[in-house]
Image (tube, rainbow, N blue to C red):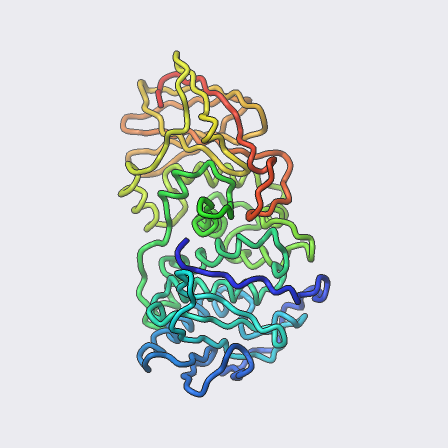
Length: 426
């Protein structure tokens, strides 16, 4: 945990209360209307077109957070077309009125919390509480803005199986703002520097066997699982229905009041490509962090010797079996670097349940090719200097309706498999 807190999804949200959205329409005003009813309010504040900051420690602090949030708004709302945080999540259209988001500089939120996102049920608007020392930290403020964007899009509210994914989305929003070319023009427009990636590769790769988004207390990955969303957004494999232009559809195409998981809507968006194939390729690309995220790839090269890859037990004669404690759970994977002993690698996989496996081969120039395991077998010839990694993902034929905060036995059931490897060792 990093001190981020998502406010509890409001119980007052009535199932079925919102009709399908009308995407359109009236152009928003250049300056949104202040709303003093949202949050605790106050008499000392500073405004920008889309935000109002209350009780900032100084004008410079207020100006700093306003510039950061305006820059993020410019990227995701103006640039990418996400629904405005100035619109109520109670209304069924996008015609306004538009209100400024209130941001409160607070002394303390307790429990090692740097910031949180609150909501006002009457107006259907979010507000941010940020502890004073974090007001100038985009990884904190834009993370919370990511929650506000999710509220504004409406259809994950009161859907418990999306709950842990709110943190995944918020960190994805923060990292995209800080690092991605997608937000480069918006950063420049508001004099915001780019920064280092927030990607926690030690967690994502070392614990890749976990459920793809796992909200388990103290051991879960839901703050760290967002590279999957980076993969979905950058879409390096060019799957139809994915990419940044389609990202808001994770909310807008979500089946109303279904309490399905985001994997269900992604499966719909990418049809006829199945989400199991997409998850399998995501994990294959994580073998070398080949996501179209240059700063993350550089971080991988710096840290790769520090990751835990101890997924298998040797059975002798080139045979290996996955360790019981490291068996991939639902939509999780094992990433298995191989030590080539010749110029060709052959692998046979024997598994107890459906899986997606891929051999990732990285060339000396950094390009990676991906060879799928077909009929339980894969083979690749290696040129001089090439390296290979096998990735085995647990991709059941059925998509589970699971709550990441309360994993059931079927979701937490590991994939038991064995490998016969020729031409390499583990």
